Every structure is written in structure tokens, then in C-alpha cells.
Image (tube, rainbow, N blue to C red):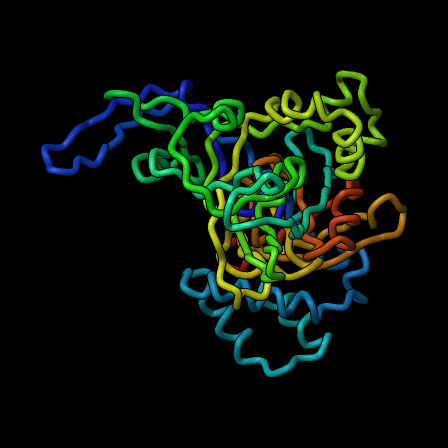
Length: 389
């Protein structure tokens, strides 16, 4: 998943941190954070109408309904969602018109706008890749897939300052000070505590696995091990595709996942230096075999082609989102009710989404080519609409 469950990060150096120690046998560091002034932007929404949603009246809502019921597993304990999810669960195999009527009676659609007032934004794609790996290091399987290290600190700023909801810090202790965690270059060169889950045979595949956020590793005996996002080192995501374009190595049309992979095959001596330009590093955990799909940031399995990753600073995690875009590399309309069930390190902005295509090579081909323009409408439960100035 393209970066399934990364959350929003702030650079540690931007905030002064004071470490408080406790007199215990095994001291647990407590962090006092002095936040900067936070400017609250104007709400990026405008009340809309159902007839403004392209193809709303003829959209097949059955797959969307299944994804919505998945969201309710996580949302039903929230006050604004309890009644909606209870009523949804009571419907037995509703037809398309019943589902449409349910959404129209339960929600108010709001169109999402960018800070400059525009309604168009970038829609990309992600998927669940298959890698080849081993439980032990060999001459072939020499690239480590790391679990989250014990020396990585995660600081939820909302615990102290509610206005910083969805903002987290990642760091490590250096003496009595909290400093940024190691970058990709530092981790690859041996810094930090290491816990290897698996070893894989391709450095580029491992890099793209970190971008997707989940995948399946095929072992020599044929067994598939499912892995998913566990944590991240706190450094900002930097697009290596953009780096290749800026360096004149690829043009914009070539800077897809497939194009970057081809470049890496042709330039093995330059690969490590390129990857290090993205300091962000993702750590993984093994997932149960029984999971039908990767877990998104909402904590529920994603639904192929009906789940999206969004920026939770704008779009509420779990909300239904009507997406109006086009299929990868075409002008064919793709108008669909999606569920905001995931987040991603590169998903920043109001009208911005990452479309989950599913598992395998075909899904990867669609995800790698997807870089479309699109519009978004988020559904808010009636009675819990955002306050607009």
C-alpha cells in the first residue's frame, strides 16, 4: 500500500523537546513538547449536492458498500458513526437503489478544494507487491527487510496538545536528548538497532515495497509471508522519480515505477546513491495469513479498487469519498465511491488520493502508471458536518 499507515511527520529539529527522566529501575522517557504557533487554515470544503457527483445515479455501489461495512468495524465505536453503522449492519443484501438511498439519507456531500481554490488534484495508485525472499541471508537474498527497531521513539503530539492532532514525531535518544532517527543512508550503512524479518533478492523491489507499505514475500518453499507497515523513521518522503527527472536521467513520461525499475537495471552503480536521496525508511511486521488484504491506517483490510489513502489532516480517516478521475494513462472516466481507509507519507494535500489496486503484477501495472487528475467529495454524517466560515 503505497505506504500503508505512515501518518503525518514533523522534523524533530523544528520543535524544542525537553526530556524528563523518572527514577525507576527501567526509566521510560517522557517528552514535554513546546509546540510552535499553529495557524488553522480555512476548511477546504464546500457543501455540495448529490447531482453534482459525476455518474452518481448510475454508479454501481455494491463493491463500495462492502468496503463501507469494513470501515464500520473501526468507526462504529465513534459517536457520530454509531447510528449509521448500526443501520448499515441491519440491511440484508441491499440492492443498488437501497444503498444509494442510505447514503443520501445518512450523509451530506462536501466537495474538497485546494488552498488556492482549485478543485483538481493528483490521484496516484498503489498496490500489494510480491517479492522473493528467505528467512536466512544467502548470496542471493542479501537485502534485509527490517522490523521496527527498539530505539525508535514515537511521540504523539496530540497527547499534550490536541490542536496538533495527527502530528507525530519520530526520533531516538542520544544521551539525555531526543534527536532525529537515522536516515535511509545511515540505516543502510549500519546505524541503529536492527531486527531482520526476512531477506529479499532485489534492492529496488525492497524500496518499492516500502513505498507501497505492504506486500507478500515468497519463500524458497513456496510459502507466502504477508508483511505490512509497522513504523517509519520520521524523515520526509522524497520522490526518486522527481530526482531522476531533475537530473535529466528520465523525462516525466518515463518516471513511472516501471521506468524507474528499468533505469535501475541499466544503472546499477548509481542505484544506491539514488535511493539514499529519499531519507524516509519504512519498517515492517508480519501479518496473519488469514488477512484477506493489507491493513490500512484505519485498521481494517483494504478493498481492491475501492480503498484510497488520503491526507488525514483534510479527509477524515474512514469517511466515504466520491472520486472522479480517469483510468491510468487514459481519458476514460473513473467515477467511484471509495473509502478513505489508509494514509501515506507522500499523500499530502486536500485534493490528493492514492488508489489501491490490489495484489500482484496486474495491479502493479495499473498503480505504476496512475498519475491522473481528479476531484473529490467527502461524505460527512448528518449532524456532524464541518463548520464552515
